[in-house]
Figure 1 (cartoon, rainbow, N blue to C red):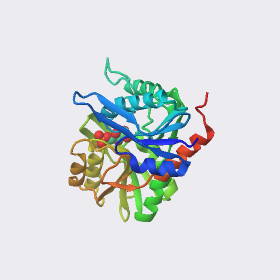
Figure 2: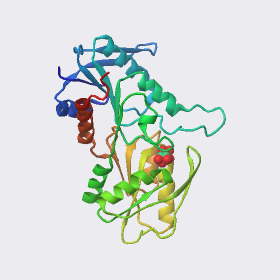
Figure 3: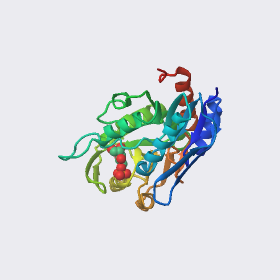
Amino acid sequence: MRPRVIALPGNDALAGSIATRVGGELGGATVRPFPDGESYVRIDDRVEDRDVVLVCTLDRPNEKAVPLRLLAATARDLGARHVGLVAPYLAYMRQDRRFAPGEGLTSSYFARLLSETVDWLVTVDPHLHRHPSLEMMYAIPARTLHAAPVVAAWLRAHVPDATLIGPDAESVQWVTAIGELAGVPSRVLEKVRRGPRDVTVSLPTGVPLHGRTPVLIDDIVSTGSTMIAAIGELRRAGAAAPVCVAVHAVFAGDAAERLAAAGAARVVTCNTIPHPSNGIDVGKLVADGVAAVLESQPFAR
Ligand code: R5P
């Protein structure tokens, strides 16, 4: 039986790429709120005895998690063999320790919630910092895909004279990998975050800025404060206006406008979250990753 690929609202393009790559069939689903705020979910095509692939990127996770869980339960109830989740952006990865007494370890709790919802997970560059791998957090097979090769290819084509700059220690994993693949130098700044919008960064000496195009690389732009602080520091050091590249375009509130106003030469993101800044396509990377999971069936019990 061919896998049934079902997009949650807003995920149709990626679901189409996945269905084509895995030889699956697209399935329809209806997900909408009832007038009282509860969720109505319906699967419109047969899923009995099939592998079901739900496609739902998880920015704005609070409004998506309940419908996703209800839809996965519906698929199981209708006889699906296994239910997997493709979430190109995986939320709740940054609260990975108790920064203040009494705080919840929400990265672990969200992992538990998803592990109870689906049989397997595929995602792109989750924000792994203090957790060394997704497998340590998730009780289901969880495949991490890396956008570095696609980002590096974009840089080679569009900014061949780049100097890559990571805004903080957490970005070193992405900046180093992309720099090596693109064949350009990379350095990492030092960041102090005192609150969501209260961020300062400092530039170490010896960063080759002159005669090259500075490219800030980060996994996530959320409030934009990290990128904005880094742009300010680079401009104070006499660098040209930097190109800002991020994997996940979370862009909370007016972050995109604030980033443009801060002096970014250009803002480019991967399409793990649909956004006007998307310029780097991870569709093939994700579709290939899902095909590999379905072929190896690591979730079969
Ligand atoms: C944290 O270390 C991440 O890698 C990003 O730097 C951070 O999430 C960006 O957040 P914001 O845009 O709110 O500064």
